[in-house]
Amino acid sequence: MTREPLKYVLYYRVSTKQQGRSGLGLDAQKRDVELYLANYSDAPYEVLASFTDIESGKHDEPRRRPGLAEALALCRKSKAILLVSKLDRLSRRVSHISALMEDKTINFKVASLPNADNFQLHIYAALAEKEREFISLRTKQALAETRSRGTVLGGLRTNTAARNKASKAIADAKAQDVAGIILPMREAKATLQQIADALNAANVPTPRGATWKPMSVKNALDRLAG
Image (tube, rainbow, N blue to C red; front, side, top):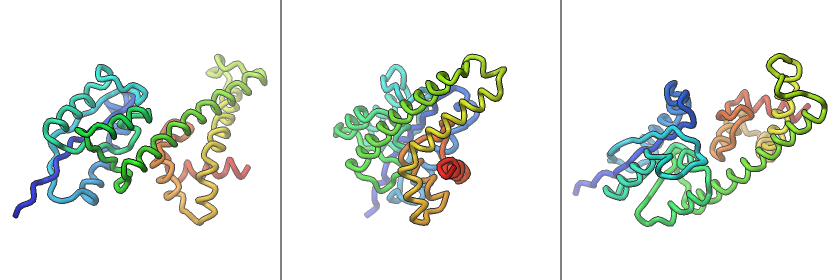
């Protein structure tokens, strides 16, 4: 008896028009999805369509995320699985993730967390949301401390030393934010790549808002050691 193929609808999200035009971020999402389909999906499978939004993950309204609205509608109509590369591509808000989990007409999978169940995905989303809130507070604190030392942030373009000082303060603060993850892993002999993968899976951004690489993990470790 021939098995009916699993149906997938792919959804991608980038935050800026520049990322959309350049493929920055989008290419990485597509690689994650391809890896999932090749290694974790039950064969055979069929990709019905893919949708992309250029919008911040803070906004979940259908008018701001028409691609997601269309993807969800197609999933409901065809009983397909919504597949995203990372949890934050779907939403940065735990409330929205929870609502989708409770929606019996929607089934979604996260390529970078292929074996995670709904409970684990909810925990990942909650941890990532709290982590982002804490990072935001630490960044604001670092900027406030820089101002209190007399650095005029509005004039940083013409003051390289002041700009570098402010950047260092922010990077130092963000290194502290991830210390609870990277230091225990390093002590347990995890490689820089393994640590980077763990941070990316938790949707924790680098100080520049990018994904973690082995060198960025090393830089954070060096800051913590200093």
